[in-house]
Image (cartoon, rainbow, N blue to C red; front, top):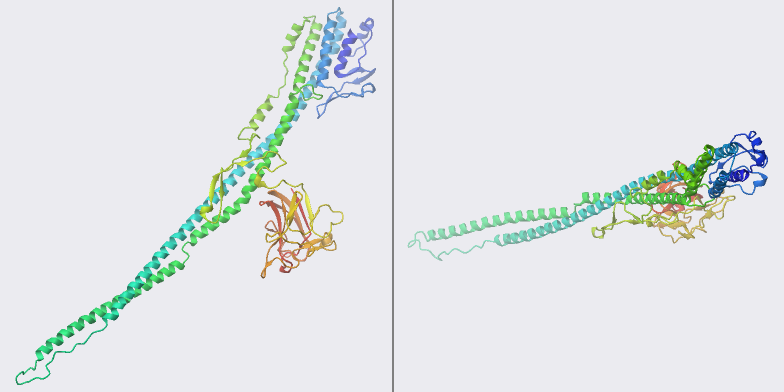
Amino acid sequence: QVSGLLSATSRVRKPHLWFPPPDKFCQFRSSITMRTAGVLWGGVVAKIQMHVGLTGTIDRPTTAADSTNQTSSVSQRMHTLSTLQKRATELMQSSLSPDAKSVIVDVLLPVVTDEILPSIDKEFATAQGQLKTLVDELEAATTKAVSLKSTAVSQDTTLVANQEAWHDLLAAYEQCETNKATTCDEKNKQCADKHVAAQTKCGEVESGATIEFSKLCLPETCNVKTNPTCGMQGVQLEAESWLAAAKDKIEAFQLLETECIGMTDDAMATCEDSEVYCNANQCSNEKTAYEQKKEEALQSEGPALLAKCEFGYAVQDKCADLSEVHALINQINSTNRQDALSEPDRIAEFDAVQRLICLLQALHDEGDLSQNATAACASQTPYPHTFDYFDQRIADLTTTDNITCNETAFTLSGYEWTVGDTPGEFAKTQVSYPFTVDPASQPFVACGPPAPSLPLTFYYGTEMPSGKEGILDVGAGFQAHGELSYGWDCNGDANVDYSGCCRRGLDRGGGLGMNIFDRFNTCKSGEEYLPVHWSVQLPNGEYTVTVNFPEAWHEGCIVEGEHWCEAGSNWQKCEATKKITVTDGKLTVKGFGHDSGQCHSMGMVRIEK
């Protein structure tokens, strides 16, 4: 019976314990070394070792007899403990000497308390450590996502405010132009009315300028003898009357002439004022204000989109971390696992161990060995561990303010503007942006296509450089190449072919080959060289980009709006690595036709995150 009990004990940690026959037991007792560190293992003294690995498996020493089974699961140990308790109960119901009882207790109790219980603690610590690591990562991802949401809301609010101000200032400018047109019409009418009035007045002057001279009524003969004055008194009266009439007419003419001149001058002044007013830029201040706000609004589109996409990516990362946390919790909450993660198995094992300890202690103390007494004793030592702390942390990290990962849409500023060339084309609407949590897709539609695998390296000659890996651009217009879109355009027109004209072999471009920007100068408008672009479609965000401009002149070579090469570096190789930010869904390199002397050729582009 003792051998059966101790053999059952050995299956807890799977050593092979040898004990003498019962009739030799008392003599053997004095030779037992009470050490928890050493047991007889297949006839060889070996140190009991238990290692809880990162995977949750429990490793022990290996012997030839036991090389096929190196892991002990919690469920296996539970079965062994149940068997051990059953056999111990059977043994304790038989008659044992005090020495035999003491030996059993002294050998088994340290194994249980010093080996099995610490292993349970270690297994819990392993599961706890794994969960803590994942929850810490979740907390960091949550902090980042919440911070980026604040930035996205701020940038979106700025964009919406700029677009609204753009609309209001455009409306004010158009109202100013409308008011100007109305005033101009009024002034032109005043000019026309005064001109007509002046012409009418001056016509009266012409008619009033003529004085008719009528003959005086004088007798044909005069007899001085009979008419000593010869009628002079009558003639004088008639002449005075005529002179008075003539004087009145002259004065009326002079008055009309003065009025004509005055009205003509006034009409001319009014018409000149009308002409000056109508030709002047009366709304220059309103126009400048609207154009400045329009430019400000357009410039804020890129940062707002970038902030929104970075927030979306951060939420996807946070939710991926949350999924890992939930997956580990499911493992911890499940039973009958073959590792150290199962908390129900661990609790059941702890309870079984406590019952066994109580049974052994009762045997040692010659106490009550009944099942009820053992259960009552075991209940006084509850399982000491809990994961409740993590439950609260996870709950705190998945509140609405901290992002639950159940969201299907996000509201930033809450509004969106449709813009246009006239105030009537503008429209403000309430909006929430649909969100995709799957990191294989873009978080928001506006973020563009899925990100390609980075790094990406492009070469531009007629063949791949020796020993290099990457993509050989063939000089075609911008188009899709499988899941990746890239290529050339002339001032936005992708109907171009810069293959035969412009690519050079590995004897050029420092051994990389190269593509000469528009070698035959076809991208022009009259005498003006238009921009030639090479672009690759990328999600908005920050990238580390290396560009090689290998030959001749390159002071006019531009990458994402930035002059890439230092002034004075013509006729030397220019290769530089810089941080750039994509805000329009493309990384763009700009040059000009060959004879422009601005950007000669391109040899390599490398894109890294």
